[in-house]
Length: 378
Image 1 (cartoon, one colour):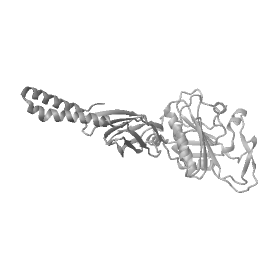
Image 2 (cartoon, rainbow, N blue to C red):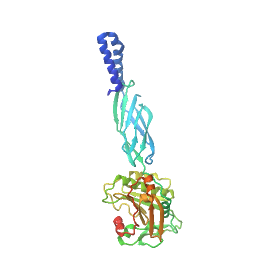
Image 3 (cartoon, rainbow, N blue to C red):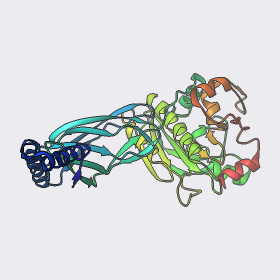
Image 4 (cartoon, helix red, strand yellow):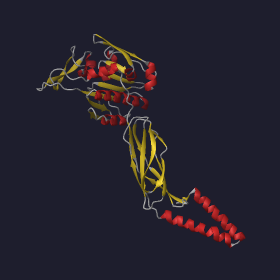
């Protein structure tokens, strides 16, 4: 318990009046000092009888960076005294987390802006309870913490990139595939999503996964598997981890919009989603961070790989290897006999819309350089 600024001023006035009463007579003493000290004593009793308050926090729904949110606090004590509460917020959120209310359970709100992707912990709460005259206060540190989830930024793919993704997740033509039976050599016309890149890189030839035909002859919509990993021995910064989360989120949302189911694999956990239930994917990507011990084979046999390198984020997209920034800004995609793919990036649009690294470039075809392919998958 301690004096407030008002309490200090009030006490000073009482002391000056007491001095005047001693010097000039009891009238000043009776008129000011006695009521003043009675008020001080009453304030001490009032604030001392207040118990430690309880704090209930109401959180907003997860959303993307740059959006605003309101946090609601309900503070309740055994006596409805004035209260000033200061919430603790991390660097990934911005705002003024201060409210002034009454400790009777009334809800008070403050506004925050989501700045960085991730799961951010809010709390504890510093609560200052004051007596009804505002002369004394008691300070409590309430260990009440909650987590605010900020989804990764979602970017729109270009029509060409969206069409390439649609070809990857298109319905299976012909009989519905059965269980996995083994690997065989790639033949023209096989789905790119079935190519087993690790075996292809190891044997310098394309191999595809072979699935037996199920009895049901209906067509089915393929589910897309997106794998996010961090290249071993790369000194990746959080900036590129965030870019990888944006890459994976944008691809997954586009696939879900096209009606495909999505399976997400990351070093920190997996998630599955269908159209209309993308929150599971986005929450998993919000939690995605640099693992202590990156695993090289934690995301095997995926359709699309999003890999964090030391200074870039690379997307292994079908038979192509591109930087995700270029995947967002493709304005020309030409295929020659299904073997060579040309991608031209619009740098100005990339800089204005995505704010990625200016050194992003397009890599060559995944199979034009066997050593690069083997480095990625072996």
